[in-house]
Amino acid sequence: MLEDGRGRTSCSPPDQSANSGFNPNSSHAEIQVKFYRPKSILHLLLIGFSLVALPLIVALVIANVSVDHLVRQSQHTLLQSVLVTQGSQVLVEAITAMERNARQYQVLGEKLLLEVYEENHTKFIDTARTLKVLELNDRQHNLLDEMYVTENEINVALNTYKHDSPETTAVITGFTELAQTAQDILLSNQNLISRGLEKIQGEAEKVQQTLTAQVIGLVPAVLFLTIFFAVLITRPIKQIDRLIHQLGDGQFNPTTVVKGPRDLEQLGERLGWLRNRLLELELEKTRFIQHISHELKTPLTAIREGTELMNEQIVGDLNDQQKEIVGILRDSSQHLQKLIEDLLNFSMLRTRAPSIVRSKIELKTIIEVVLEHHRIHLLSHKLNLQLSLQPTSLNADKEKIRILVDNLLSNAIKYSPDGGSLRVMLYKRNDMVVIEVADSGPGIPEAERKRIFEAFYQGAPAEGGHVSGTGLGLSIAMEYAQAHGGNISVVDSGETGACFQVVLPMEQTP
Picture 1: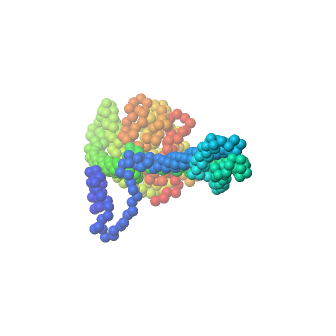
Picture 2: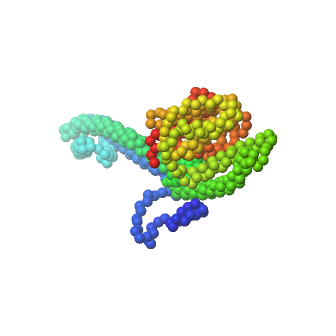
Picture 3: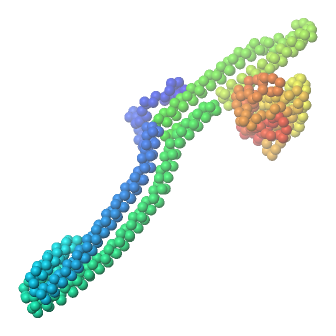
């Protein structure tokens, strides 16, 4: 049963296509900023997995780029070092070969030796040019230039002067300087290799530190995102579960609103519609109970009056069998009246809170009056009554307290076996009044203690037969106790049977 803007009710499910956006016809237009809500739980899952995986993917890409850059740099440094080392070794070999050819030419003067020298000279020049284009430092470039100048002077002298001239002898001594310069280039390259390895090692440590920092930063972020989306996913499911439990427990007040993906919100709206329909049916059931109870009271009154007339023998004398039958009719009519009164009290409690008419009452007197009313049942079941009643005054509703005590005693008598015991106690505890009613029956299992105060709930059958009644007595007693600011509970008395304890405050608040 849903209400529209004019207070009317509707029993149809909520329209899922309704748009609750901006109303241009409203007198005070309100701009509402709404957060993005996924359309479905699947959409929310996809968003969650994507956001959780995104930082991991970014971290993997950064790690891959960093490692790839480190590998390329290492390969480049290693390749340059190998080429410079190879070129320097070739220069040393070429210089050694040229020196040998030049000295042989100086001694023998054969042109063939000069031609061999020219071949090694060409090899030297090609190697020097190859080294020139490599990534050398400034010192290596200067040494290479010096070698080139010195070797060119030797080459010009050998091709200009005679083999045994003083000029040729003077320039040949320059090969020692050339060899030393080539060795300097090779040694300088080895130093560069060492520094390059140290640089690569430093870069590797930086990459390792970067990756470690990413892992340290990503783990909390991923955990936070995981927990955040887990809450977003499970919260509406828990809200729906709470709604279902409320419906199962008969709680029809709108205490839970589902917030989350739109499909789950729509499911919550349908549950709300179902709740309203159940509430409407509950009210219809209560009205039916009221009507049928009132309709039953009229013929029941006639039956009771007729039974009383026959019991008092106003219409004529009765024999023993007739008196027995009239007694049975009288007891049955009284029991039926009790059931109808329970139904009426229950229907009134379901439609409105019980109205309390307070006055000063004596609880001891009320309990004694109720016990006198049940005297016949006590005698017929041969119950041993144990009383401990402390005189106590209370500002409360006399009739509702009487019904409360009557329902507890009726329940205790019903479940007590023949020849058993019934204990009733009344005493004060601090600023509270305590009433205890204990029987010697089978007791109440732990699993049923939370449900025995529900309307129409009946426990296991009493000893010797079926449990008679509507299952409303304890529910009505609980309602009246709570209306007086108190409560009823099942306590362990240390003996067999069930023990109900009623606690009412001495100071009653209107």
